[in-house]
Length: 327
Image (cartoon, rainbow, N blue to C red; front, side, top):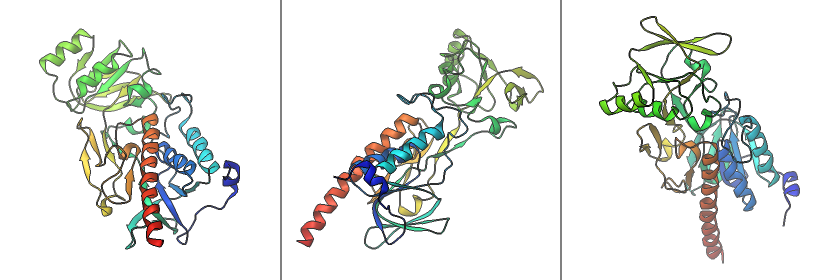
């Protein structure tokens, strides 16, 4: 059996003349988790990644068991190293098209002018966060403008938090963040007025509700210091919590016939797929935030492993069928 060290030295797939078992589009934790599992299953795997992870602005990743606090790019560096150790290849590139060939295989073309063939495709390209266009908000995203309490709550515990209301879930979001700080203010902005029941709960938990739209985020010395309302009033705050709408990156999947569905919580769209990530389109799987827009780093990595096991089972059945025909 080939050892990881021997596999690392072996040549990997790199052009259309070499058809790999699985091509993974997107090299985040979901894609790398899948590639590692497939490599250990002795499958040829190619990961193509543009090198722009969604969580790059964040200084650290949290909640990843044994790697809590590791910078996001360091997690990816370690993951690529492990994938290559089992013979997988990871290259930088932007996949522009995925086309199904008449024989059932897939041809991928990149913006860098390369072409690759694969028997199966796993798309783990993540999502896009859609949030209000408020001056100062974008530049602070992933630092002191955040959305996930499980990713950032501990780090911002006991701070002056602002929850920016943009939808019907604003009150629930404010009550959730109250778990981490006693100083939470809900800025209603474009969210509907809290119901009578929500108002009672917010008041009971000491959450202040500020009506009116937010005009800008006040920043000083590279940190959030407050929220300016349309009225001109500035409320001091240290951290801003938003509730973005999540949109999975669907451009490569649309031509293949993969459908989009709304997340059960009504917070965004993701690919329609079963629990293994199979989309119902022969040969096409998804994982990570393409499969579940709420998945964090650990859930994304796990979904990649789940998809890899399903892909290997599918390829195993195909190998057996081909062997029977050849015999």
